[in-house]
Length: 422
Image 1 (cartoon, one colour):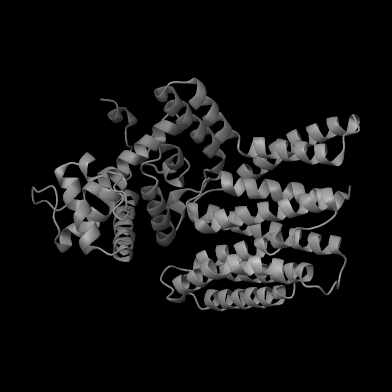
Image 2 (cartoon, one colour):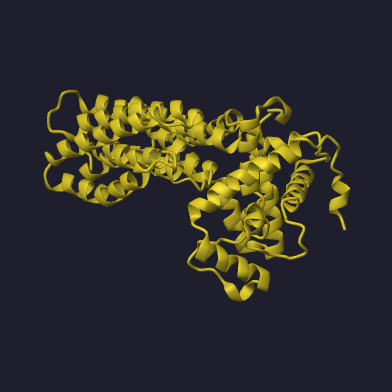
């Protein structure tokens, strides 16, 4: 078995699984993970049967272009149009490669044009802290396109093995770049977490592969054992949750899940001191913490738990203290009128963060359960759906996050976690 192909199979399988196991809400991260897994599957088929399933070869590039398009700033007018065009065209383009391999030429051309447009939009973006990342992703996406083109075009310019290696290398670089960007956007320190996942996955898969080789196992069994070792370690939390569901009560499941997610997230917590960052970055960290207000395990990874106003003896205590501090700051945005809800301009910043983050309302979901809500929440939900566009709510939340960031940054006294215990 070629060592090079085995190396790229293991690396892309692990990196794709790692991105999906992060359970990110970002479409770009999920598409990236699936693109890596599609490449790993194509490579496994090539190793086992010495041939490719042609429809699998353009999938990594198509998924990666979709991921890059979702990275474009939301305020960019071309973003939604490009995403729709990609969503409509991706599946037909992939199927056309099964009918005639020369259709691949059009796919490569379309992907190259998309990468060029992404690079141009990235370079003209006003969001400076994303501009360089988007430009780098566009360049690597272009190389992914070229590598995929060398494989699916019937020109045979380079040996198939080298073409797969080039595509694998491009995908790995693209995956690492997006992983680093996602961690930056979440306010996380990714290095220790990635290293731990990598060592754990390759330790177990390597041990299984070594045992299999000692007993002269065939190629199929070896690949299965490597994939089993990598995926079971990468998705260990999901497997533990499934086992808990089968054997434990609901209360114990929830408690174990919170503790497990908190322990898993600790390597992601940045050592960044909030007092040392500029105003823009502090606001971004506050915005991210607000979005995690309902998830204590993710809140425990926020650098804001290092604020002087937060005290506690363990990560969960500090996370609960940070949640209470944020909720107190949100309450300061509430107009002092004595009412529980209002729709005038003075209410908009309070409404934009209190109902979605503190109460957990999802204003734009199609399955809103009005019957389970109290009267105030029903009024707020109806107001959001009838009078507040989603983009407007997003802008209000950004402004509210800036106001809350100013408030908590000015607090120097310690916040006593004992106050959390009734």
